[in-house]
Image (cartoon, rainbow over all chains, first blue to last red; front, top):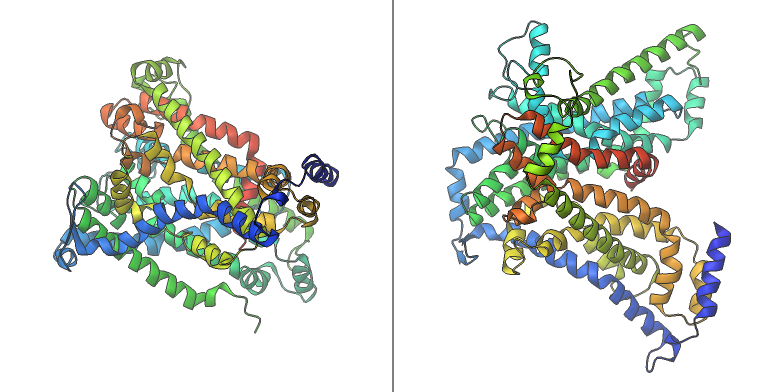
Length: 320
Length: 279
């Protein structure tokens, strides 16, 4: 590789006479500044228009009534007042919080568990890692459809399996008491391979010597895990908790799966807020109301992130 | 490496075998739904709910039906064009931005980097309503532009490329700078060729993510001619509610290319995900 690098750079240098240097009126410093702005411009403008402006609007549109033609009328807190009296909103809020509280720890434990299981590099583990990660290649639409088929009442493979264990009459996706847990299980099944990889990356950064020293001191595996692995995994843990938090409250994964598997039902038992936002906006054209609820999602995210920061001290190492 | 303190060598071996068995069981649970999808797509309707994995008389009938009776080829074409366009444009923009952020000195660079980085955690469902209204105001609803343009910009790629460029030795460009080559020239003939490995990994990741994306295409297109394959397949489900063999055949057609890409590039894909977790 180094040889080819060298040939590329000399080729560029020799074949190219100093054209740019002859450009009138610009010093080298000015050229660099101009180049910097021009190079960053496409992405910066794009992010500003397609992420920045929508983000500001997401937080402010809730104070407007927005009709089907995109006209804004200021209505103050009307949308937020409407929310207070909307029982479906409260139901969705409850589902969102439950989904978050259950999903984040499940992903942490399953991801770390799998990572520890296949942490050592050998051929068997490499194959296992690939298998655990494979569902990530498939779209959630397809994943949702396949699991819908598997959990069909009575005749689905899962229902038959449960019946074989003596559990009958359970509707995995059709009863309000089960649907959310089935959806959660599928989400964990889908995402755990991704978090496994992030954890493997973190585990590989922990110097071997720590474990060797602990072993000499007579520490067993369990002790090493609590006193070396977990503390040194702090930055990775923080990253995992942060992204799984965002994924659980506002991720497209949750939306896709719920859209395909349950459409929020039965009886809104799987309707997370982002799904209700989508319904209000694109089925009932209540854009202002939808945006007001989206701003609640942002508030939940910010609060949960703040709690996470306080609990982990920003994921920093703590040597005391 | 042995935990000799508590276990004898034989016990360590037993522990290891138990762990391998656990891994195998979990792997089987991971593969099973995908395998089931594949098998159903070769089955006849009557067999769909029978608790038997292998089809009695495997046939390609379901695939042929899906590819000929539904505009599925059109959806596949749309998905391919949209994903490829996003991937190529995004990599072009992100390599430029990453290079500027890592190497060029200009006032406000750190502030711009922070501004870009702060969009990292903004997820689509949160901004979907205003984004839709914005894109509609720009007249891009129901168009390829509407499918492609908003999906190009994301901080993740910019961030990874910047990190990569920071790790490259500066000497590589210095000769070119001394010779007075333009910055565009340096970017094109020095930086881009050096980025080949990371650009290849990101290309796979971007293509995958966009091939599999559903929410934005669902929101921005109502004209069936513009549907991508994920939207097509979701509506297919409501049309052919009980014809699971067709739905699974369609699912297999959508999932198989990505699983093949994974089998070929698993090392690169998993390596780039693994490093993305590290600060």
